[in-house]
Image 1 (tube, helix red, strand yellow):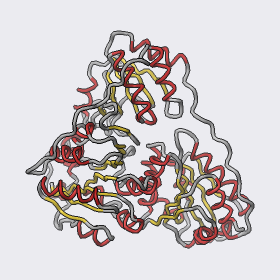
Image 2 (cartoon, one colour):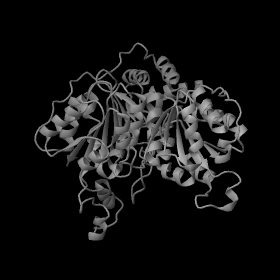
Image 3 (cartoon, helix red, strand yellow):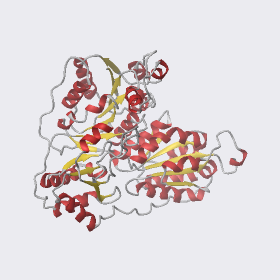
Image 4 (cartoon, one colour):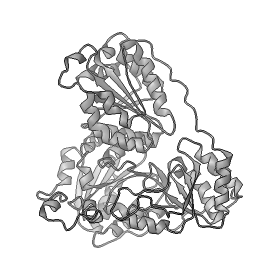
Length: 514
């Protein structure tokens, strides 16, 4: 077999059985190898940002890496924004990037670039295979690197001649260590803070936001009187009726400092001390009070569930009832479309076991609170802040969980970065309903213009923030990519169309004019 086939067989043998791809000439032998190897599902994306964002969503829901296939340095560069987001979410990912043949590089052809230099800032492991005999072993090392906790980005660069020359046999994947145990000192310090009698916050992210971690954290909070919160953005949170409710640290600095005011101790479970998304004149970068003391219980690569269990035992909370949400979901809203009305109807209509992908940005800030009483579901957020993740993330989540409805909450400005994800959803028949909130502007930036003290904006400034003239027609854009949809201007129509999208298998888009 050639080098490309040895790599594909190594990937499949190592449990990597999905490849999100946007290939070019240098990757044709890898593409051809896919026909000769059973067990690899290939999903085409029309833009590399869709490919890498889908790999992120797949990893979050399957808890294993997918491969991406990208074309040389420019292809990697097109996908880097969502590789950055995946990196912040600790999503495992294996990027396979084609390159010119080794002997062709010296001629500086038009697509020649420093691929390793592009990959390193957002990759934990980077290697260029030197020859075809090395590719299988390099692929196995990339799988192990991606699976290293808490989840890493591995980038393997594949020169064209190393793919077409004779390769070696498929390589076994090296063993990967499990989560590191948490020290007894960390447990003791956290328990001491909880017993201090001073206001205490337990701040969670990562694996601790799954049901088992939340139940342990909820018991600790109920037993000790501590407050329970998640950091502002999280890779995956399990929530809804019958599960532990927790707030998030607000995005807006003034709101966050108000919520965190008064805490003397913050128990950090996979998190760091809360920090503002951006710097603002005369506002703090760190959101907790200056005299608040952070206590690191567990890092992301450590055994967070074991640490919460040990802390529960230390504070005698194991027999404490789990404080779950049992309030009924809100009723569907009617009348004028508002963020509050949308949140209520979303909570009322959300199907059980749905996956919610949240990139609603401005409109969706108020959706998290009412949906705590919705049917049990998973909530996925943008961890890296680079917009254009929502629809690709939903695409990957739907590939990973074909038996679950995926609901995308998408802002119009963010949608235009990676709209091509709709085409992939149609091609693959993915069960994704996209709620597209069309306020015809980068609305969040209008607020940020004031927040940074930029003065009174004039016409030139506002033109940089508006998405009208002409208006974007998302129903027509979706139809052009094979996705049916409808536009709504009141809550009654929203309720009907959302219910229709949920009941209809396959992709569907609802444009909400708000």
